[in-house]
Length: 121
View 1 (cartoon, one colour):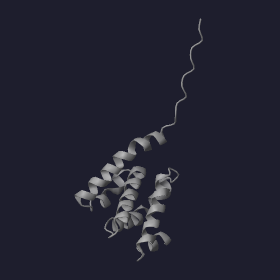
View 2: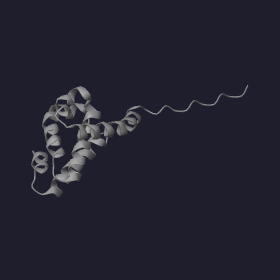
View 3: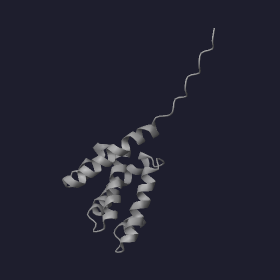
View 4: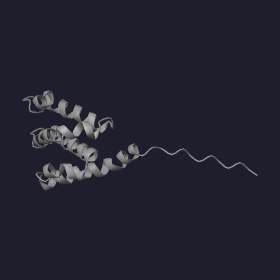
């Protein structure tokens, strides 16, 4: 409820901080898909509203939040929301997803320890 109120607040700085906080939470890697799934519909509606904001920073953060949600939950879950975007915003989201995908894959893949050198015979 606080996120909803802040995302539609009349002061742009409040909206900016709300979307910034949500983006930090989503991008931190600590947010689990199971926690996000029940509220994804409400959050995506807020992100779509934020993507049409008059403040450019708010628009960018809202699209970054949408891209982070896409990375966490997958394309199938967000298709109804992404289909509502125009081509420019869709391009921006795709570029954000492509830029974040290698780092997200690296974060999910555990680092393999280097093999120990073989002992000389």
